[in-house]
Image (tube, rainbow, N blue to C red):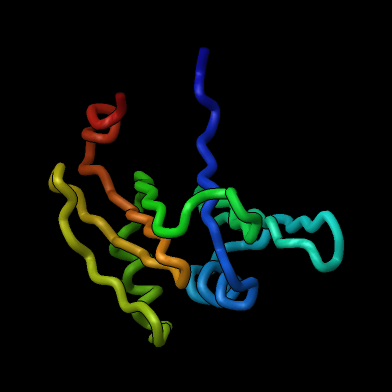
Length: 129
């Protein structure tokens, strides 16, 4: 048995705010979106450089305030890119994770947290289960 990919489902409450944060601010690409009917809740997939996230307005799809940790290369570069955008609702800083990795904590408008952690050279495999 082998895990191929884990895709978090994060709960959202506003299509407009989700697009502003994930597409405009984070620079994710909208891969696809789905509604069962024109007035039904939105379910969509966004991605950027291997990070794939499902965003859902559906009741029961995820819980507000979820936290996801992602091993990520280029934390400093992404931080510089996001800082230059002067997003009025969030200006993250880089902290250090419990394991001593640089970590960029992102907080979306719905209380969901995405922690992008950059393993030190040669330590990525050691942190895996």
